[in-house]
Length: 161
Length: 393
Picture 1 (tube, rainbow over the protein chains, first blue to last red):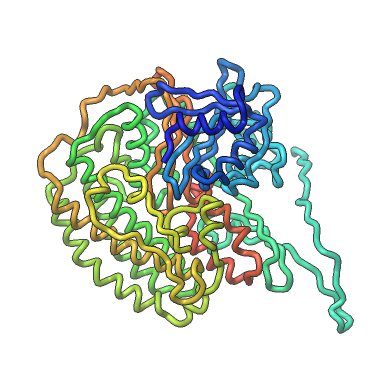
Picture 2 (cartoon, rainbow over the protein chains, first blue to last red):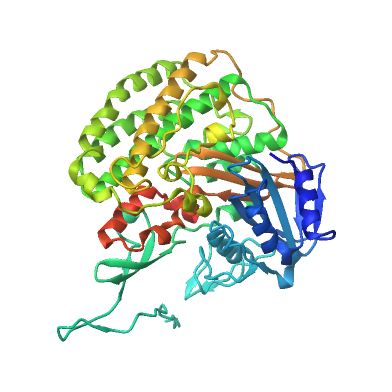
């Protein structure tokens, strides 16, 4: 079982300074911010390194931060053998949001990444089945962005609720 | 009339093969669902078939999508989210509420008193029994066994009666609130629940005689849809579907929340009794014996439950949590339900994401259905026990 500080030190030793940022003093648990383009290597390292063994991706969520004009992806990791948890965050500019997929590391990410694409328009480079999942394929816009405007007409049907 | 430019689905099939008798065979694509009785709602499976063997299965979901997460952001009150979480997994609404309430309480650092904790545990375990009964009954129904379905529903009704007495509703309760409960349980709650526990225990044996060890049922489910434990973890499968693969993993034990550390119960895992470990029958039998474990928890909770205690903590009507975020997970009948809640200092949730167990469990379907027969697909879908309200949210 390792704390976030220990994990942060292991990660900076492996990938060098400037890739990670440790955020503490939060009401519930610290998190580590990781450079978006490095996420796949980091994920693979976290899964396979003895002593870390993050074999389970609990949750992958997209988040829109309208004040900073960024889109973020939050990874909640857990190790079933070592019993430790880790929250990783990647942030990207709103107009060019893309980052490598972790689908090959944890299969859980397959549908979760499709959902994040569907709801936030975050693109996951290298995803084998990069389609919308919940909305129809020809839906316009990304519903969970804070500035989302619902389309007025969809296939001749008025969209209103 | 509006013209719609609709593209047909792009399907690539293998070229026709000469069968040797002057005929040619070719793969075929069949849509199973969305209006198929075995898909438990509106799930569409795009099956590529070689004769009757499934070579590829692609689930299409989203028919029930109403963007629960957007609704939450439109509520200007954290309490108003509770009825919405009911409607995710609508056959296990209590468990959804408990998860949300615990997440918010951890975020705001509220401690609820023991009476509330015990009522919540009893309610969640009763709900687990009700949900498993529905899962087992409809699973039998899918396979072609009609009678067990009716037997299961008789017992499920008794649980719903207890819920109705407490909350006024039979399906969507809005009973467990942040910081407590909607109102206290009725005076005869303890006797009702104890009577149910007593009457229900022999019914599990009845169900086993009727369905579990039925030769036809075993033939239809054993060695079908085998899910190895390692694959299940990598896909994030949780709940009875994971335990059916022999992985001893239960959040009530392994990441305890509420007061589950006070009870003695076993984690049921599949053993491959009737065939390969992790087949449909294993996933089924795990649910059967989990009901027994839930009964154990309810009995202990009824014994320990204090009679005094305010069921609503003194929290403001409009909740204003500190800015922060939390990921909190609980064990529902279908597996790990996680809430990822981000708050700013306002009374409106900034982001509420639900990691729905059915959504994640369903994603393993393409991996375990290759090589199965079309009729086995029905068994596999039934054994994963999905609720489409939760898959699509």
